[in-house]
Length: 265
Image (cartoon, rainbow, N blue to C red; front, side, top):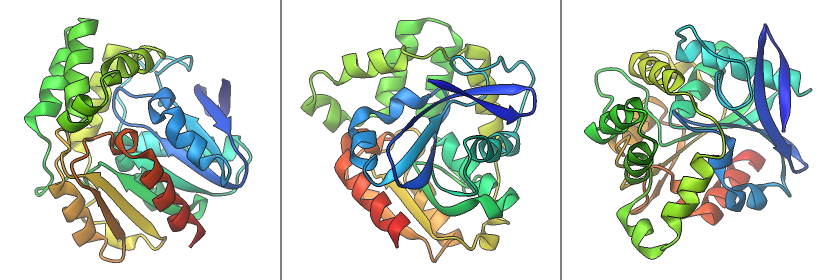
């Protein structure tokens, strides 16, 4: 575990592993670096120098007491790239992290080699956030840990996966609780995600783009991936049939193969 410096007065926690091309991983709302899972990171570390960091206010990083925007989080991501000694990086962002990735490449295009947008949305009038996501946020807001875990498990992983992997709930519980995620930070993340809208700007992106989404995503429905592809017609769209929000948990091998092919051209 390390801390990023150089983000103003803010310290962000991160892990680093592997060797190769620089790859920045940006997690979603209420999430942290442990939720990438060793299965995915192990499949990537032979090809990439991976940095997976935690958003402001998460884990051992500095507190986040003031509201922030997705653009603010994108500035954090740019500072992480600089602080770890990279000039630029491939970027994979999931959910809220995918929104941050969009803003990162729009605000700081010089530090981004390529983008992969996982289980995310562009916002705007065609953006669709499900009631499942709203129920998950409401459950987290109660501060009842077990209630929040049950609801987020159901929002993040498909019923098929839960049925096929009998230990999935305990693995999810252990990973989710391994890093501190304050409730006020989650609520600020939710507000930032609700305000996100890049629909009128995505046409300016000129780096290679990959869109990844599970067709059984209960939190951010797959319609959002199709909308992103309409806005980024040159992007490669890859759907994970029957997979939930955390598609990389359900198919880490395919996720890694797609990222390697995308980043290596």
